[in-house]
Amino acid sequence: MKNIYFDNAATTFVDGKVLDTMLPYFSDEFANPGGSYTAAKRAKKAVEDARECIAKIIGAKTSEIYFTSGGTEGDNMLIKGMVYSLRPYRNHIVTSVIEHNAVLNTCKYLEKQGSSVSYIPTDKYGFVDMNRLKRSINRHTAIVSIMMANNEIGTIENVEEIGRICRSMKVPFHSDCVQAFGHIPVNVNKLGIDMISISSHKIHGPKGVGAVYIKDNLSIYPLIHGGNQERGMRSGTENVAGIVGFAMAAKLAHEKMTDNYMYCCRLRNYIINRLRKEFDDVMLNGPDCTMEKMSGTRLPGNINISFKGVSGYSIVDELSKRGICSSSGSACSQSKKGPSHVLMGIGLGEERASSALRLSIEPENTFDEADYVISCLKEIIKQ
Ligand code: PLP
Image 1 (cartoon, rainbow, N blue to C red):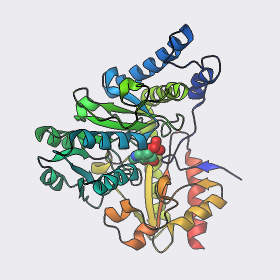
Image 2 (image 1 turned 90 degrees about the vertical axis):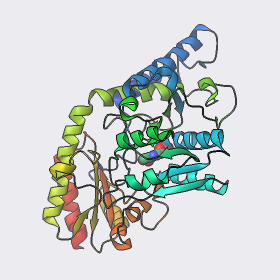
Image 3 (image 1 turned 180 degrees about the horizontal axis):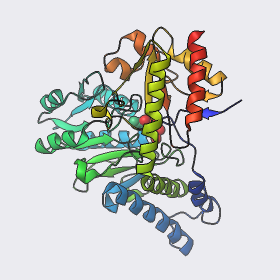
């Protein structure tokens, strides 16, 4: 049976070059970077080179990058760390209704501890309501957290505008860039973002590693205390192999970004157009990237489509039987049956939200694979 992977927003395979770069750090170069002998210094240098690589890609200083275990930790670290350092004077958070659960559940946790949270609505495409955002910020706001690109519907938010608003109101701005990083340019200076979280496994790097950027004038309360690694911001022996692999994955993604972007957009639009042609009752969820004026507002690899009257979970199951990996929402919410908070958040009714299928593609996916997936979908929907 064919094995076709169309779930690249959930995770990606580790690139061969990335793996080769990592392997020595599991064997010959296993030293703890905290040591003072030569092998330890080599491990330390590998971590610092990786830091420099990530910093360069996002237009930051090396002193502004801290390695983490991934996007979830990064979101927790930045939102909690900022609130903990500013409360009780500033104990209010502004975020959106379509954030990843790493942000939303962190906010809910902080609400239980006495923080107040404004959840900003979006329009039907998933674009955050800028007026509501502006009106929600007040002198008690500790942080604004709005994702750069949505993991379910691919909407690319206008973070540059949000950065301008936050700067003018002197409020720190965090953006979860987990889905954006490596796929579209993320330049923290150009975009005016104070903090970002990124993750390695979405860009053909290993799982369990990521990074945060924290603008160097910001003071954040660390969540993990211990041996003061990562300049006291995140104690714990560094995941050297993971960090080195992450930097290599980031470098490769950055080098091939334009070609990858163009190819994925073509494949994405081909699939959307064919689905619209082959099925009477399909609806694209998120920005209509096949229209010229919306072409740059959706992640190149994201397709989210509803088939009227058919459950998204059963489509995913049926595709799986035919060797196709897909999803009906975010990987982290697959265990929680029920319509996605993102699709409900953009105002879809329960029926349309429950009939959604997410296909997330990457440059190794082919047009032949797309044709096979569409022919399987025809069979499944007819059934
Ligand atoms: N934020 C977004 C937008 C994501 O898509 C994900 C993962 O799906 C995360 C955060 C969590 O990242 P990680 O899996 O590295 O913890």
